[in-house]
Image (cartoon, rainbow over all chains, first blue to last red; front, side, top):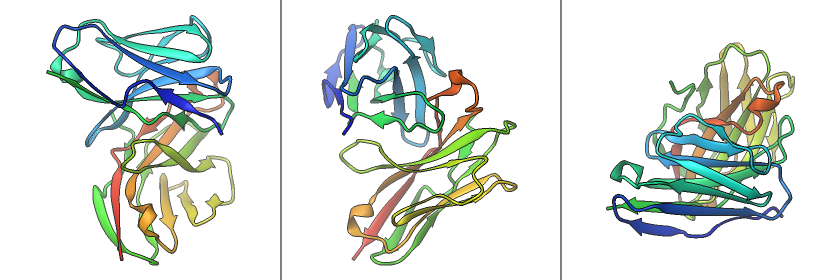
Length: 113
Length: 119
């Protein structure tokens, strides 16, 4: 089975801190994604990557950056955390073929105080 | 603007009964894909079922079936014989224009429906 692992289940950070959310997948998937989940809004795409060192903006990239130095790892970076970035963050991966489903990690609940 | 609408924020269903979760979508694409995911309290999103816009048959996966009405732009999920373990948040999602590679994986999600199965 595909395994997508997010390094932390819960994180508490202070406003202005630099925050790293790490995601690792073990199935050699080309595509990786970061979504943000908020009540009443569903999931919204922040950034995605089709290949190593390649990134594309999603629907809400402001305040975030990403890094993909190795195929299996995709990091989400909050350069200066703000309270409105308190949310559940979900990482996902896929092979990228038509109809291919996403495999998700368990999520990181980030609280910015 | 959100293109996926799930009008039911929450619902209760009795064990062993069937339940229908509503989903409507908005797209001008001819080729698109529709997904349903389940999110239990553990947080992980679990893929349930997929329907391609050109698929003539409604998709089924075990106790899950997708009632796809293309003209109405509706993709309702039907769970038959509900079990206590079905209690979760359910999300409808769409991948627009799946014939282009840059849409792969870029799902748009609805707000979700919380289902509680009671004994």
